[in-house]
Image (cartoon, rainbow, N blue to C red; front, side, top):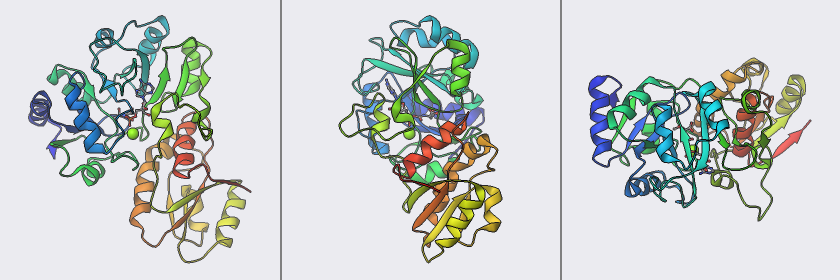
Length: 335
Ligand code: TXA
Ligand code: MG
């Protein structure tokens, strides 16, 4: 574990320049970072995460100009979005240049580029002098880590170091927007909301896989959408309904092994073991707390079936809903 001070950042940069892997804080979640321009480093990242190699990595930069050499063109909508939301939790998918190795782009002709807002990430990228490929720092299939300790739990012995920059502010991964086609298309909702995107570029299509299960045999626009995600050990079922009906429903299911993933204000009224993930009227708090809550559920051996309170899928809540519906394997009960 490295302190996120000058010395720690210098050490992390040396490791990356020598082809090693370092866990890094960003404003969204911790990432597993290495030199994005070195294909064999990207192969090491896939191996450390246990991630299928056709699921491309996000390339992180420290200034907008650094996006230009990575892409064939940086079109008008990308320029406007960069001006509005970079640095910040927005990843743009654009046709890639020759500079980006196929390993990094998972064999695709596009590349995902992001300029993170975390000062430690920014300083590290500058110190390395190269863009950093960084998927979320979890083992494939686990919730993304929002603290250095969570990252250590998944990656101990698999990577060279972790820079501890404290807990992440946003808590869910960046918004991913495809700009390599006619109309901008939202592939993954995050801290930069649909409304914020529409305000800058007008119409944005929401890929059906954001809110619904991908039909059998359908092609995923973003390879990440076809893989099982955020699956806690316990079975999770998403429950839609008012606060009152949710509490009645959950309490009627009281039995050994049954638990709840609820809003803060539900907790004291539930008769089953529960883990809260923020207040019902605060989507930002839900985003910040969701992955920690999913990890905590994994540690509660006594809980095998979880009834999760359904978030309002508006604003940042769309990102919370998108992660939770995957954790639930798309199983929903409407009261
Ligand atoms: O907030 C974040 O984005 C974090 C931090 C560390 O920056 N990173 C992150 O990376 O969440 P990862 O690899 O866990 O998720 C990247 C997502 C995946 O679903 C992947 O399929 C998609 O972005 N993606 C990457 N490149 C793509 C491309 N060229 N076309 C379509 N989707 C792409
Ligand atoms: Mg991930």
